[in-house]
Image (cartoon, rainbow over all chains, first blue to last red; front, side, top):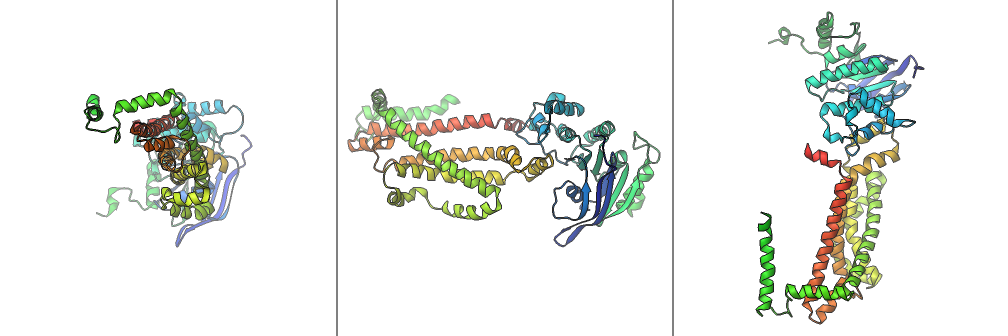
Length: 242
Length: 250
């Protein structure tokens, strides 16, 4: 666990073409150990494609990348197997000793210790996503790949899940690549932001806000406006042009 | 409400019995229910019914086993492998269009009129529903779940075992139930061809002596076999697919 290399992910010149459309046009990316990097971009900008390439789920990309250490993925949908109970879903593919205890500990961490015998169909959306986080955590990942993990949740559940993510990160110190379209979420959780536009990383921003962060902290608003303008979204009503 | 539903069948049986007692219905054409019951009692007591029943059940199970295993292997190969899909599926889909009961004359030429004919026909009847549902069950699995399993470090064999097999199970059960229905039908048809034993033989023999009570009894036993096998499969399905209970509730 403690022998992490400084560069968990190193990618250079990642390119992905779907037919005629160039989705990723030469992406360079590095993620250090323990670092949370948010990947922002408009819908269709290729953020999920980049994550899938790093997760080894897309074999048709060109370019070079290396990942070291263990990794786990959390998707937008929980993707739990409906025919396995919660604990068996978390334990899926986990090898080694004391699997049961590790699974129980992971479920405890996401606050679902009492639901280990439940079927996924009996859980709410937020609970299912927490199980998906437990399934990732139990693998003790050096790198967590998150593909809009809170995108399908209601606003209140999303806030709670963001807080949970902050706690888990503080405790485990994994590095994370967080694909999101939620500017506030990126600013709350990430150390560094990458803005993806027309297949390239258009901007890289270090977020030097002190933790724990809040949307009404000084400096938050300015960064938020800057990000929105990078994403071509008017930040205030005056700029809409009406 | 439940009582009202059984009024019509009871009335039909009573009318049938009444017509026979009144002499309107000749026992040469159709024996009354009481005579059928009596025949059931008589043939059970002397072991004839049990003997023929066992013969028929054995044939049905052998045919279902052979056809089922073959269908499972080919359906899995076509569902899991691209080359299997290309080599197997179009041919099977085309062969499915042949009415398999219409193959009796050809089968008689190929395998004769003995036991192999009966088992082959049941196997053919069982093959198509199981093949089709195995194939469809595998094809319909949510690709995203397979992907998630891959990110959890499951290799191909583990993905088949933990994701594809359980995911295809509801479809497999459907195929099995349809196969049993088709298997019984094939059995009934095949047992009318030169039987030496079995329920069909029992019925054909009774026809020669105009024993309509035994003919009707044979029909009832066939129906009962279908009912019992379907009930057993439904029970097994409920047990194996208990995870779906939550889905239905939500």
